[in-house]
Image 1: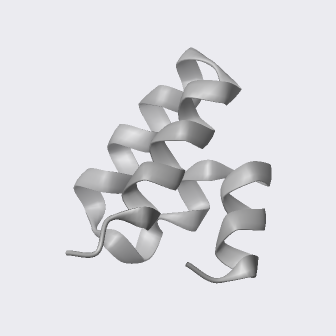
Image 2: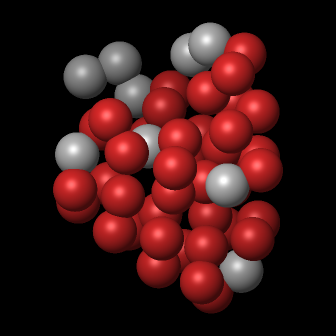
Length: 51
């Protein structure tokens, strides 16, 4: 995880996971719509995944 991805995950979570696929983007977008904190946590979990 690069510093810029983490910073982007904190500021706008869906944009940070756009390179991980459409499903990840939609999941993080829905989490962000439910609240900012769940979106940030979801984005960081997806970015931390090594697969």
